Amino acid sequence: MKYRILTLGCKVNQAESTGLGTALQQMGMQQADSDADADVFIVNSCAVTAESVRKTKQLLRSIKRKNPDAKLLLTGCWPQAFPEDDFEGADFVTGTKNRETLLQWLNKNMDSEEKRMIAPYQADELFSSLPCADTARTRAFLKIQDGCNQFCSYCIIPYSRGRCRSMPPERLQQEAAALAAQGFHEIVLTGINLGFFGMDTGQSLADAVEVCAAQEGILRVRLGSLEPERMDAAALRRFAECEKFCPQFHLSLQSGCDSVLKRMNRRYTAEEYRSLAKNIHEIFPDAALTTDVIVGFPGETEADFEETCRFVREIRFSKVHVFPYSVRKGTRAAAFPDQIPQSIKNQRSARLQEIANEIRREHLAGMIGKKVSVLLETERQQNAQRFFQGHTPDGTLVKIFLENAEKGLQNSVICVTIEGYEDDCLLGR
Image (cartoon, rainbow, N blue to C red; front, side):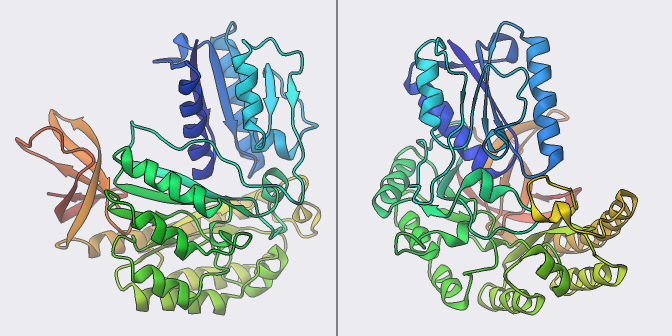
């Protein structure tokens, strides 16, 4: 039996899809070379916005139209958050927990009478994850944390992921050692609220970084998306003591205006975020600080928006992901008064994105002439020229053209001189 896994959403979803694929192969299934060859499709869904659910529905319809005889399994955040929804086209539906149920169902040749298994999270839920391995990649995404306790007023994630819980210390040691043994050179730690790793096990995120860095063969340890909470100078100094730590910090901002942050139920002020950014750059002079910003949140005035624009200019983020606010059913913000018209949200999004793009171009231009280390991840061809793509320690993508270069360079770290940039990518040799 051959399978295809289609993933929407965040790095955690991607890591979990990799784990599902590994588990399926351990059961004797094969990954299909194309959609036409697949007997089973697994769609790992996202529910962070209404648009992500719309895309999932569109994908389900497309699969059924093109492969009417294939079985379709829907899993992920959408069913978990909204179990009452109509999942038309899916032969089997499960959420973000009890993924082994999905695998057991497949193992029984899909003859189960129960087609919908969505169990709610309990307060004392334990951390669970599937094995992490993907030989097609050079970087391993290791999920070490799940769930969120914050309940931001616009966010459905606490309902689709449950409360914060962490990978136990002994399991973390085993997973990191296994990834090193498989030949990975970089581990990217991921989680739904990664900064809260260890709050239930007596550990900290710095402990996780040190465990991974201690593995022979691991050359880099990188962090996934973070919330500003629990990131203090003490944690940053411990990161800095680790030579393998990559100074890339994706710290969600969402707004640079305190009144908007308060309505969002974010647990920090603009000044606290500013202080954290200052600490990062003092401890890591070459760090890249990237972020997410939501514009057009209910009640956001033009003055509030301009305050966010000024904040983004001041912090000089290496990259900013700008999102117009999307009404999400099941969240408190969906019922807030003073909803912003879509046209204004779109205008503000475009204005802030242009500011972000300008700062991004300055960041890329400032890299020209520097020598950086790059982990070569993928080899490609462009106009009869071979080139590799990889990332610098601060997470910037680099394209490196190689003339008469030897084969087998993938998954190696080399020194690269930056000579220019195009679009969102550095060019080096």
